[in-house]
Length: 547
Image (tube, rainbow, N blue to C red; front, side, top):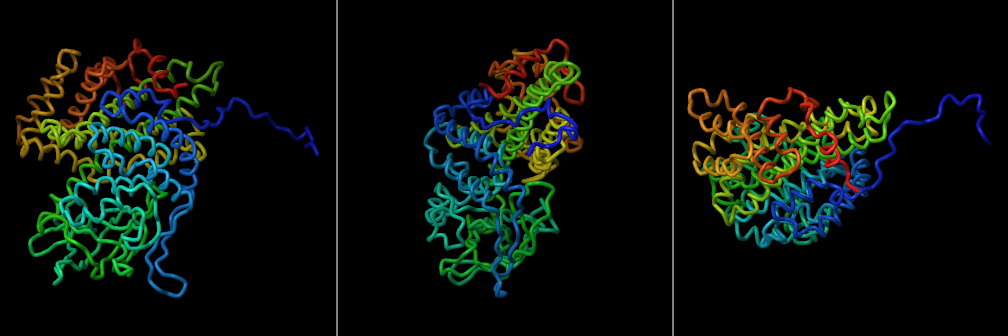
């Protein structure tokens, strides 16, 4: 029966169509050029295959995984303690797809191939655009590998399972599983980033294992198969591998107190736990736990850069798509001068973040073979983690404004991106921690300063504003009495100069504009303040989903 047309109030018109499935690799010019430039182009077939998944099924499953938060099941129906977390099937599907394509292990499965970390960064970048929460266990599984290699026996047992690609969520001993994931437990409520203030203790047993008593304030991904945990011995802080299920099939003495009620990252579970004599194995040397786990931290910080760059990219995709279809005041939004300025500025920022992230991934990749690249990776990871992650929340909010009120509604996907945006600036050390880490590296590892300026000098002469900035940075560290107070300004300018250098050396469209606006003062404090001579249409076209 047709409805009575007397009650028709309006026709739905002038709405952007839903963003249809797309290939997140094939349609991303900036990503494809960056991966090729940094040495990962050999993986293009694999990246293209995952791109189709990331821009299609993964997007849909990501929505469901975030609409259905995980639930703590501390006890079974009979009162037995089980300490399990229940996830929606969509979460498991996202994890399955991520592991199938190697978001957690591609670099290690191809580590004899130069550029493997660059290709893996691209996988993580596409994955995070569709669903960022599952990036937590996938990132930690990826980054735990170098730390576990401090113990040959543990590496021999665990690494084949951590690099396997068949997702296996069953609660079983490691030996009975097809693949495993790994998490981390570093911080405690009384210390946070100051892990030296930890109180958790590890007591050595007669068989060489340890029993751990204490707590963790943030225990990430509590349904992983094991965790790397910091605990004190008489020798100092140690790093320990703590499995969920022991070899005999019994559950380890890990008690989940509650799940965190978080701003974002809703698909994934973060928890508070207590250890009631939990069994663990020492990784590395007693008293060297911080040094042992730092390799894991360095890789997770790179993934913070990847994740923030990915969120920026996806917010930009949504904003441009809307502006290309929505009309206002007689023409499409993308045709209005001021909207062009906003979108072009966002596109420029997004490309700079992605380009620096992939450059750091190349340095991480080459670190084992090249001391200069190792030193550069050591410093640039902290610089990039500070700056890119800081830029993400305001970037996503500006993209929301491009949609107006629709960008504040959950169906647009942008509220989820906005909730997720602050996480990476906090996770694995907030902004102050990154700045202090930069100062620590520069003072204790002088080769990092040499590597940083070598990178800048490689672009010297390409732009006058970059040359002037190199001069300023060269003397920025002279007054050591005020260095810590000034460190945020210094690290910010180090990041901007580094991004300009990467773009100028690559010769990408907009590189000179980036230098003149970010280094030369031709820019305001907000996005959308590019000078009138900027190539607005070209920048937007480069960032839009390519045909």
